Amino acid sequence: MSQKWNAWDLYQVFGQDILVQNTYLSLSLDNDYHNWCHAADVVCNLAVVLQTLEDAGYPLSEIEYLAACIAAVVHDAGHPGVTNKSFELLHEVLAEEYPCCFDSFLERHSIALFCRALERPDCQVFPENMAADSCKALREMVEPLVLASDMACHNDLLDEFASLQSPGVRSRSTRHANGSFSSSKRYREAKLDESLFSMLLKIADLGHCSQDFEDHKAWAMALKKTEFKADPTNFQGQVGFFDEVMIPLFKSLAHACPACGGLLDRVQHNRKSGTKE
Image 1: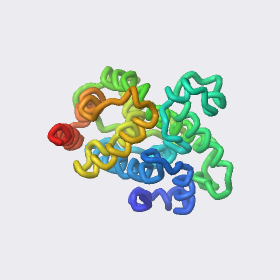
Image 2: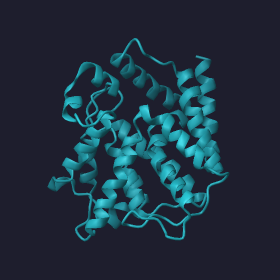
Image 3: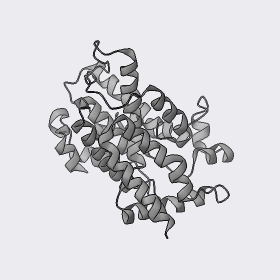
């Protein structure tokens, strides 16, 4: 994963240390699916999507790259291997820890762990000379990315993204270090930029569905094991997951950015391959 940071010059630009990255990876618990290996895989999936978008004329700013990468690393920090619904039903400690929140307990817990880690000397992701407003903007970019990974929000996010689209992704001005967009952008285009940015982690989080079939199969088996442990009575088969979640998600991405059509092709191929087994 450090190769991706090097490729984007994040170590040099932000003065990060590889040990800091590894410390954040260690926030992941050792369970079947939501572990440090999954976090690293999501970063790699993210790299594929970001590079494809950049090649299509949709480059991100350095701070956006950093926010997306951090979100990929920490989005399942502290994940115990059960669903948000399980916490609500079982009245587990995380639901009690965030009594003012009515949803996304696990994602909010991961964000809280990230924010607490920022206070540790060995977890400083902000360079010493970064302005306070840039630090604040970075944290504010990470939070919605992590919250977007909650599958309970999937349909709402996808509907919003689809409603803002027009065919073909546009070349755009990147987000400034303080989190604002170029004043020359029209409101609707800015909203689409924000919506697509919030979709990046969701696409990367589920990106194993666009990998080679055997790799996807290994991840799918680990996820099945986790879901079955969490709730044996509410288990969704892979075909239904592809039809209801994955194919609409990647179709929406390919509609916004035709260069991402290859990812959709692989998702559809894996769906067909899965039905043959």
